[in-house]
Length: 263
Length: 124
Image 1 (cartoon, rainbow over the protein chains, first blue to last red):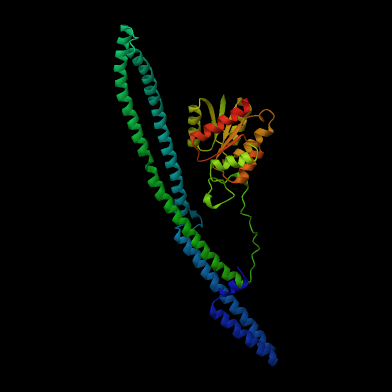
Image 2 (cartoon, each protein chain N blue to C red; image 1 turned 120 degrees about the vertical axis):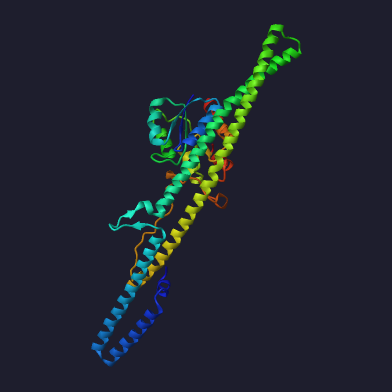
């Protein structure tokens, strides 16, 4: 924020009063009335103090407002009672999303792992029967072997019915396990709105605090923090990949990059 | 063939274990970060390491560096399966001596191809 931006934040009455007092100060000095001039200096100080108290008061009110907006309940002892804060509620909600997605993923994998051997057994038995059937058609089968095949086909049809039913039920349960998307989607949308509100309120507080700074002439020696995170810690999934050049867009990109490095 | 799968999410470990089993690798163990994985690697005689990057405790890239710095482990083939997609990171992994890099989300076919490529190169 530049100097002139900060001054624009001052109340017009304050600016007016300052300018009047400054003129009056010059007049007194030019007339040689130093007692009067020093009185004006003292008045100037008072004006500054009053304005400062006013802005600090506004800042405090805004802070209270912001805290009330997030329903953070500060108890008598000054301790934040966590169970009532909306932020804590948001954390709980996000934990719920992790829990729901974890449960859905595991349930889906249970059902898939249950179905895979069933499919394999159908495939294996069908292969054996197909071979036997071919030999029967080529009339290469002994009567005793034929009687065995006859019974085996009977068993296969029974199993096939039972197994297909099981696979169908599992598939239908896998479908139902995807219901988490609706619930977690709603929760995430709610938390996203809260984050937006927090940001808006913080911006308002920063603007108010800026006014106090401009009256007191406080300069914050804030270190410009390099947001560049250490690569080795990891970033998780990247967003807006298609608009960025420092990020690969998929496996083909990774393969190209690695082969350019001699992989 | 004994394989260690390292990822902080149990669902991802389970997916990778399932895909490995489909490829015929049934002897797999799991660890949830580098700190847990490293002692297992040192004592367990593993033939192959599949690791995520972003994990609490010790990250996958630090695990890779620790493996390459250990005389007994330095030739262990390492496949990174991760959501980390910055070019600098992939270059860093290559420089640290990774044998393959699969970016999430991935398909069974990609995992299979990268694993086969790693073993081709080792056997060849």
